[in-house]
Image (cartoon, rainbow, N blue to C red; front, side, top):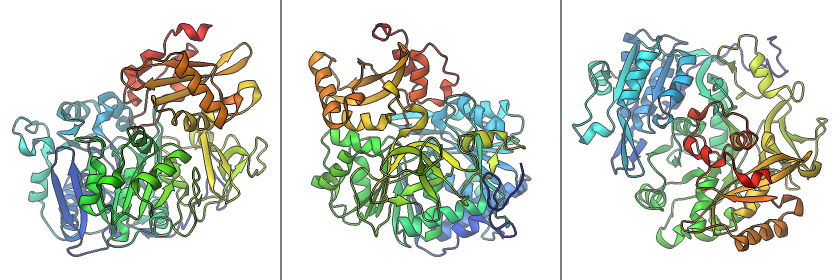
Length: 583
């Protein structure tokens, strides 16, 4: 692949600059709190910036003793706890490359990822807590150490075994706590590397095949995250930043960069609705959260359950709510301002693993319009184009970025000629990044995301984003979840809507008529599904995104090649051989 300073792909920013990622995140010193780590089980830990720096120094020394050098990969199979942040910072302080998965991926899902990136050292938790359950993950860590030849050492971090002797560390694994004690030091040397050298390897969802390994550079990631935190979120020293995420989602990487601003990070691992549906708001009150990050699905589900945090919690410190994962409906905007907090900046943000950041997000200096992302990211030449590549306004089209930007991946792992990278983003429009989102730029220069381009419905030749239908279905209180796909039918495409209903409810003619009426009234007759079918569950990726392509493949008799990428692969069984789809 040719390197060209102004073209995509191939552009490289600041090729002569060198820096260290961890050094920038650890530039704050002293007794200010850097991390507060909370588990669903009730365990709580906090670390000051000085204590965090000391643990990073000690672990970096331990990694050095294991032979870790710049460019080597270190992997973490970890929940969202303080130790995971320490592991990342120690790794990157050496100029090595950090890659992570959350333990709920399962052995094969993790193997599909880490076996491609060949880490020398694997850090793994003994287990985690979720929805009232204690899950032991020791056997997965041991198995991965045996299956992946590159792994020279498995280091186990005690999480569930802190208060339970029934979870001892396997003999084949090193003890994380012992390493910190054995190599205890306050001295740390930061290895500065090139601006475009690899920092993180992230993974695509893998729902259509083996996950792609997306490499993000040191300088581009840091520059982009600090820009978004400082200028778009208005994150300042002393703010308390929370985002509900796992270590298998890019929002974890985005969250931990908040250290560069001197913020306190609130880390939480567990179910967002355990032990109570509104537990996260209790935590936000207890910890004085100023920036609260969550998903559109979470906010919609709270509204469905008539949860009103404003009635029970002061939320006096809260200034910003962030939402991502899927488009946030106008109804959810109104819910937040009515039932959570009236004087807050609600920012729907959109980007992804591909750029480890955002194409469009919030701006505390601009008004908030229901259903819209406030503005494109600063320094991002974001546009919406028609099929010919011409810019459109007030019309739906493809979300693109016309000029290079620092947070572009430096490439894909094991893709020396850049062929996979080229195919992923630049095949549709030559020299222009195509994100794969179906979007619209509004009269306010805000952005509406109408769904993924590859899931766009096309009945009668009219393109419809699935998010347009989901926004309307969310208004029906009987429906708790839904997925919409197009089915090839009689030389056309018809819209099929699958719904999960509240416990005890059955889809009947009256409810079907209600759903259709809401969609027809608030959208168009083209949006009204040809078939509405009740199912018991909706398949989702580990990060919580619905998998429309997998469902579409199943109803067309095509295989789903990688069910290990799903959090609930058993849900796919509900979409096989549905009689209504042959009528």
